[in-house]
Amino acid sequence: MAEHFDVVVVGAGISGIGAGYFLQSRCPDRSYVILEGRERLGGTWDLFRYPGIRSDSDMFTLGYSFRPWTESKAIADGPSILRYLTEAARDYGVDKHIRYQHRVLSAAWSTPDAAWTVTIERGPEKERVEITCNFLFMCSGYYNYQCGHAPEFAGSVDFKGRIVHPQFWPEDLDYAGKRVVVIGSGATAVTLVPEMAKTAGHVTMLQRSPTYVVSRPSEDGIANWLRKRLPAKIAYGLTRWKNVLLGQFFYTRARKYPEKAKERILGWAREHLGEEIVAKHFTPRYNPWDQRLCLVPDADLFDSIKAGTSSVVTAEIERFTAGGIRLKSGEELPADIIITATGLELQLMSGLQFSVDGVAVDPAKSFQYKGMMFSDIPNLASSFGYTNASWTLKADLTCAYVCRLLNTMRARGLRQATPRVRDPEVAALPFLDFTSGYVQRALDRFPKQGTKAPWRLKQSYVHDLMMLRFGSVDDQMEFSNPVPKGERKAA
Image (cartoon, rainbow, N blue to C red; front, side):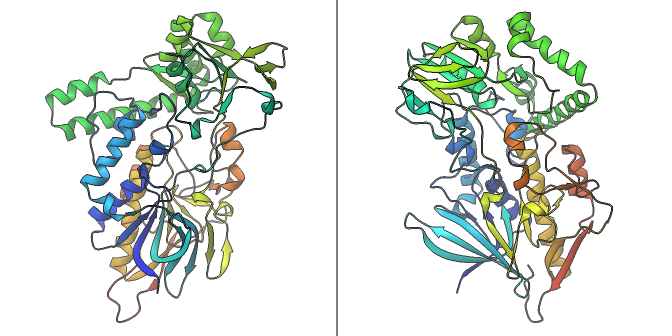
């Protein structure tokens, strides 16, 4: 007989650890387990080990609502974030609920049982086991941990040096004094370039087209001032709200007045690099927030360019050669090491196979409900963060809402919560309104959003806070499946 839990959480990264905390504090009478496919907790912050790995948003919003970030740097390095997550899991006892090397393969829902049967590969032997649960909470992130986006480059077999994807950084890579080419201009590339440039012979960031890059102080002066004068939780809460509101203000203004936003961002870059470099290498063809902005702390990328330890080339690749990369212009970039910072491979809920009452279902063909659930699929939620703000802001709200649903079902003596599209005028829209390549490549694998609430995403923490904390749980949600007589526990 399969082991049973009230809630199964998949993933022990930033979302899964948060889920454990919320379940313990808001549904203390519910049992839960966290299944983690890897050997350690931390998710992204344990997997990625490339030089300079850091947050691309401030830790007062990337940190949990319930646990203050106490270090001086607001833009934190990867090891510091991993330490924060490890301490949170330990201090709240969440780590005792984590089972490592438990890779979830599929989940089958049974309405008569009001339960999911979750099939798992356990341990290095990949033993098949099953666990049942009343509610399945996917906290496994949004990309494939097994592979990154790795386009084929002609002539790559001819290159005599090493080719490395940042998602799988080798511990033995020695780049001191070497010529390095980093392909890409996203968050990973702008992190790698200035860090590697400290010891490499020279680092070239090779981009097909420019990205908006914004410098921001690594320390939040207001936050550090508040912490000296107020209790930690109060100072953290005030800083968190300051950053939420400022971020939302700038995002809203940028979407409403894109030309003004573009000029302001480019103006900041010109202060560091001058007109010529910015016009050639830092002026994108798209508007701000059509793609996520890239953050560089303390202008480190700009400083390395000015110092001559790094440079930017905007061009298309023709092929790799034995000694580097030949561009379509005919120019050749010499390289000893090539870093393919070409992006992530997006993946919905770890690529699990789902079925409902024996019939296979594809969440990508559903509508997303409040940015976390799926039309016509019962008792299933997924944590997915914001594109214009910190991931954890939405993860916290999602965890709290899952607890609201669980407590509502318990109070009503019902075991099933299923989002239903009841408005015939709701039309389908893409999951994300983002032009980034990694998003566009994967849109067919993600659910649709609708043209009306609660199926429409606002990308607004304040809006979601009001909807998820104070809005109705009955908004196009069908509660059903009464607890059988004689059973005291609801789903």
